[in-house]
Image (cartoon, rainbow, N blue to C red; front, side, top):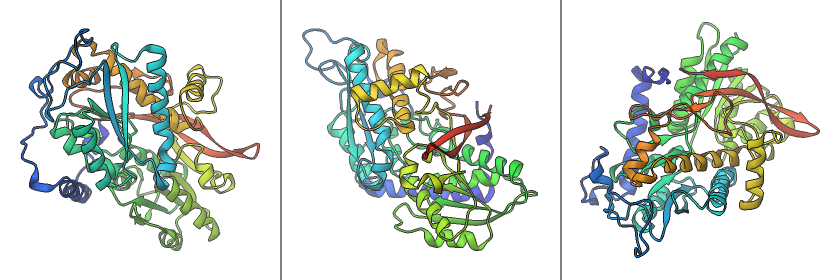
Length: 448
């Protein structure tokens, strides 16, 4: 398993991350009503926290005969259902960028219900709330899911800033918090403190470490800059880049941050250009990455761009033209949507056409992966269909190889390790037949 992450938090980097984490937790506390909560909760998972439920209701039942969980809600659901919830940016700029992930998840669960009868003899019901990538709205959304919708678990909650505002709440109440759609280092590095949260995406710190090593090995002597979102996502990438760069080969000449609410980031691009940077790591979501690349092109500045994997979808060629994007690098660990000869990819496209909405892409693939993992975990606990049982099932994954992941990209979880994907390959943006495409190059990079 990944051990690189265990030792990187030291000195000033650790202080910065702790301050950032404290700020986010303070925000969550304010948004959640601060000291108004009367309940005393613990992060420790015990059977008493989660209750029990039978996998198949008796004919006379009208609701799951389960001991209430910490929120006083049935553990599974009613009338042969398993109710899941997700907070997601579904509108605005962020919604446009990441809606395909939710579309892929919903399509797979629809397929699962229609063609497999759900899981454990129960249909899956997915309740979603639009948080617009806003931490305060994420708090409202998750409170509604837990306290009103009575969800069994939260799956695929999206966004570093948004999910940072709710993960303490979920852990305090013993709600499984699975497949977080963010690669923040904190989701998986200390599972003892947050035992109900499990990441899935590659760790941002690891991603940026790969970028730093690539630059020092392939672009020695080039000046380096980083543009990053001023939250855990960006700060993890900044720390990883510093870890991966060889200071004897490359100088980090500019560190430019922007807020997730920023309208314009051209000043940051200007600042990077003025330092003479020749390679730029962009820890940005698609809209900001495209804005930065287009601003640089308008300034006749063409550094080597290395974009975080959150941009590695064909949708990027809608935010910026293929000509703007050509030569840009990113990272991924999954098969690509244009691999239509691959049986798993072809099946995904079929599922999207029959049960989903929107155009299949690399992000809809990621949504289906979250759905498949949910199915797998639930199937492993049909005889113990409780929140505690679900987490035990997740922690039983050992070198799990998904059909939509690249061969060798596996998942292993345990009570001591909730880190998700730990192997990646480089992608390069190219133009083929006038269209922008991502293509893999080089070998898979493992961290074991």
